[in-house]
Image 1 (cartoon, rainbow, N blue to C red):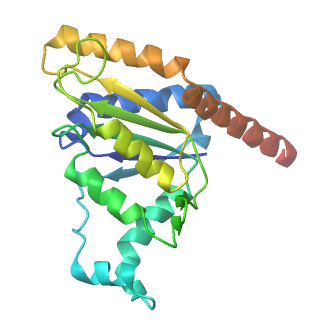
Image 2: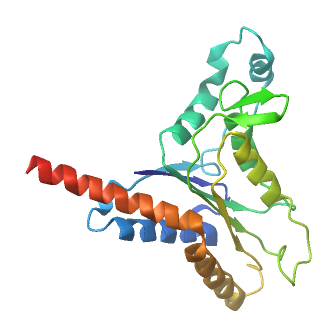
Length: 224
């Protein structure tokens, strides 16, 4: 079982969301025990290794009837990472009410007409296989619940973008108020842990992990 972990936080490993993603991976490995090694994590750090901007030649290739396929190398690499994995964990901050530029660029390469979605009279139809996807959203302020003081354009946008390529099994976990002190951070993490374990997305993710472990055990028994 392979998990694609995407980091869009400029703080990288120091971010609360990154460490929480580590925690989630650890929980998935526990469900695969004692064969935790069957869980492979593919890393895509959009902050440490920024993607190149979408340039004119790529834009021309997208709209051409006979495209220059060499322009799709970055797009194909990113799409291939999704295709070869069974689940996604996305760690992203909320920048100015929506996704940061690094994650928006990943979306621009991953959403490609005739490749990851088809354009129909009814709208975009995703061509990729659905898979459990957990999105960790970190913010200094509060954008949901009774204490919300700012709008959230990230969640509906990212849900729609992922759905456009066929990924609908998505759970959002919010780490809010992270600039309000250590107590607020601890409260946000505790709330996210509770929400995580109550959601069907995490249940399907851990079920896959357990299934991969059973399959590995069965293969080992046959080869013994």
